[in-house]
Image 1 (spheres, helix red, strand yellow):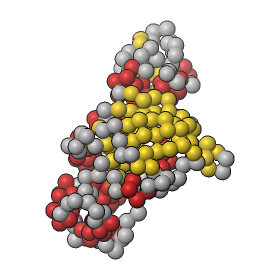
Image 2 (cartoon, one colour):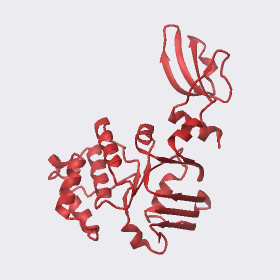
Image 3 (cartoon, helix red, strand yellow):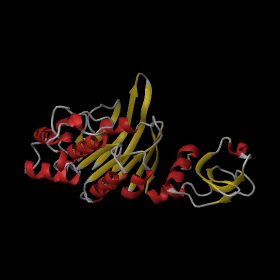
Image 4 (cartoon, rainbow, N blue to C red):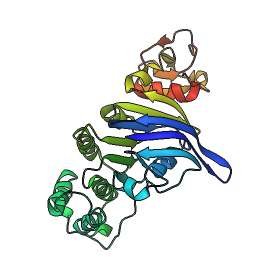
Length: 287
């Protein structure tokens, strides 16, 4: 579905992506990494918004450099910062999106009404976008990306601005998306990754440092996650530690921390969460 070969991107002699080679088939793939890892740049290249400096990317066999129009017919894209026309209503914006995607083999009115219903926008469909909340605008952005059930969906921080109920609705939409198609999801919200993704990609400084299942990434934290209790006044021990959990107790505080060695003698090694496995991978590069 997506073939990335020796892909690099430089901006003003700064390397943003460094010789990536990735093969992605159907399913839901999570793209994660620290700020500045190159995630948004990769998604922009896949969506033909930005051209690579070198290397090749093919989507359904079409080159993003040489067959841009054919690639765009395969994808739906929600960028991190999505701009809407404020004077349009929600319904008329989807009319506009449908006109841009008129090559899709769908009944426009049926598709528009389906998406408005699934994204919980039916009651506001005749209201102007300028009156929408941030969450409503984000949901309209998700709707335009999903119009026509494209073969590849590319989402950059799709849960941004969504309340918990709408995040659950979004996860359900992704779970129900045809499994033979591909959803590429970049997000900082670990719960969305854990609930939705079959495969994870981790980028760090433009390099791919992990490609595997959520369970495999979680196991990267084994032997690095510690739990211990500290009495009041002993917080100096925490200096330099990656703390992942804090809870007040009767005698002080209970902590979980990431460290290659026990932070204190009484610390106990515990099973890592997915987030702790990811943090261990990024910090200690446990490939």
